[in-house]
Image (cartoon, rainbow, N blue to C red; front, side):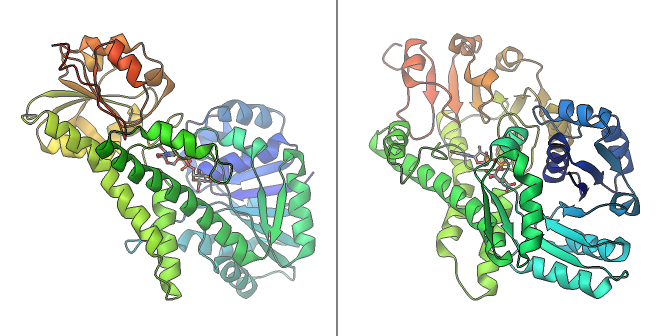
Length: 439
Ligand code: UGA
């Protein structure tokens, strides 16, 4: 078992550190945020991620997992240092590498033994070579530092599960020795390891996220055509997905992709291509479709309820996807902003993300403590996140509204159920269930 340091305790860093300690390594997670470190030392996770807090507490108690604000302390005995700091989007869409470069300098000035540096942060192709040269340039001690690209593929909301059940671990390095160490560290996860060179490893990360985003925008466009032709995109996706070459995952039509990865990484890849004078047209289209898709549900609502000013509208689900409280690039943000701009009385409900949502929407919206409270007195409801609590809601609950009018951005319910329950139902890429015949 190895002694490991992880720099940065965002989603990627914290989950990496905790799961490496779970398989027996001694891990010190380093973060500059003192308040956050104090909480983590007591086993409190700063993010909502199923299973994470319990695993943290267990490994802290078993003396394998530590948290500190001091680089020197974390680096002291580390044989391997993981870089997992953020690479936020710059205004031009490119990745801001200031944090990564600072960590590289900190490593160079602090290490006193041969060390392997593993980059988990999503960084543009060529960055690991740059990290290597920054370290070589600033290195104080007479030691060898080898940089390895080891991109992360975990999904928020199932990050712990993904660590132990991933499809592959990508290890990019020119050093066979370093690759052997990283493969050995990860061996207890039982996930296949794919070895390649540094640049290809960096590209695998971007290309994978861009491809998944492309699948989503593709099915969203198909859904828009289905709507015009009265076909059902769910059946279309199921029929397509049975072809193993296509696969049945990531073909759920909806209000587009959000979160901290796809929007940022797709724009960054367009930039990376542009930097080598390649116009990544397809990916530009994917990004455009995604922006357009968020508007479509609203357009349907505005068309159906033309005099929306002053009306009460329930918004169910705020996080960018279920099982996370993450609000970054959530479709709920532009959608709610548009409603508020139209002087709509917006009442929101989310099982977990309310605290984070309050920091964004402040007092411009109301925060209901149950779905029922949100629906009471509302003229229509909009579903933006497919939380189980929403998906498995008895459909009759929508009849709390005087006239049950539902706009579902995540296709949570079957058309048949809505027909049987007499609920007017507008979803994505499927025929509208209207009550006109019954009235
Ligand atoms: C994504 C990738 O799936 C991970 O493999 C990757 O490691 C991660 O980005 C990252 O780069 O860190 P994540 O953003 O957590 O993970 O969430 P996803 O489950 O991929 O969902 C992203 C967005 O796509 C969500 O808004 C979701 O609602 C949307 N989506 C997903 C659809 O609209 N349709 C689908 O069929 C699937």
